Amino acid sequence: MVTRTHGQRQGTRSILKKSKRDKSRVFINRVMHPYAEGDRVAIVLDGAQHKGMPHRRFQGRTGIIAGKQGRAYIVNFKDGNMKKTVVARPEHLKPIKE
Image (tube, rainbow, N blue to C red; front, side, top):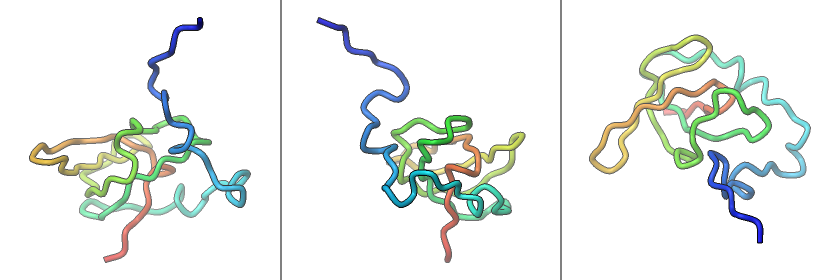
């Protein structure tokens, strides 16, 4: 038997899968979107882009931009009673209209 791997992306086949329509598409509007501090964003992982991808457990979370770190953004959100911080590149963020 082969031993099972326990890597960062283990069990992500359905989470990181793109629909047939979006397979070869680059989301340029998500990459080029200018975020400012205080903007609300959703963490939506793009499986085709590996750099700056947060852990899969944060898929679908909603947070607030706290600042910038290089090309990536710092996103703060609440997980139960704990405050958490994620550093993610803009390909994995989606603006939320208020």
